[in-house]
Length: 196
Image (cartoon, rainbow, N blue to C red; front, side, top):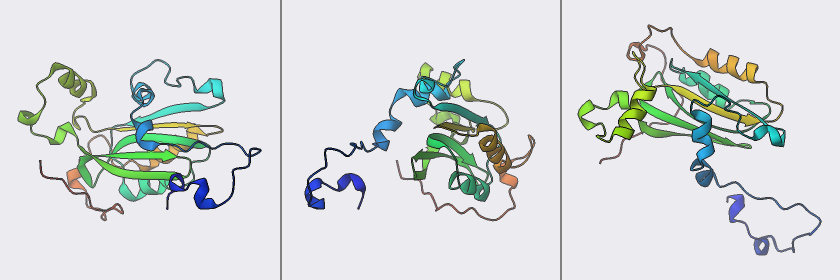
């Protein structure tokens, strides 16, 4: 049972007015907030207003794919000081898939977002100029729009250590192509496309 489904009646005791009130996070609502998009954008100062609350933030970016077992170890490991993280990333074993990572406190999830535009035939690309500008903004050969973008927010974080761990999870050099991958399969569950 999730904590946000428990009511005071189920606990069978009146709330103690001396205890602090805890507001539970709504991950779906948080993902729709524009601050994440702003932090992922090319802002001169991606730290937003977190410093006013004693928090810090940084954005990790890379173009090379992640080794699946290594990135799972990093994302499920000790991210000391990280309170919230959100990202999109790609794995060498699943070059067509954009994956998402969300961390809020001790709860983390990884799920498939859909396909990168680089894996979609151009005749299926959107015709709207805004959508095309978005694709072009993130396009870089030879990987197209595939990229790692992870936002971390926390208190007492060691960005250098987190960046080093993420860098160590990358695979191959600039000439590496994921279709040449000969390593073991990845530890993530199988993802399936749904029929349109």
